[in-house]
Length: 155
Image (cartoon, rainbow, N blue to C red; front, side):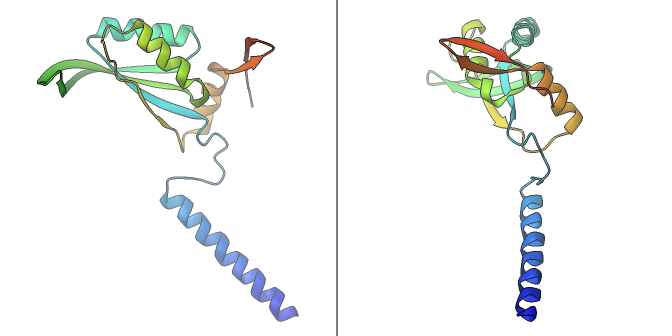
């Protein structure tokens, strides 16, 4: 019996090490409390003025904690059967994953393009103090009694 317990403990130890290695190769960490809670969204805009207006609105509406505006993006794409080549700016938007539908709606309603780009990916790993800051800036939005209620989560 003692030998079986030792063997079981050894197997659990090996399994634990293997799991940590799998997580590390996936860019994950078992101690990431915010894994997937926040996302980065990418939006292109025709110029700096449009990007700044969108960014200010997103931050003011608490849909984004921070928006970086990257100038000098060259976009090549097909639109209505023609190859287009445009100079644009790229917006890098940090937000709460649960607020992405609202963020997308805001961009669509305020963007000059007929079809604007809003694509997002979850943040799997990040600087914990930054993510805590973002957690305090962009609240979760909960449906409560027929009305939306903004709830701030500070850890």
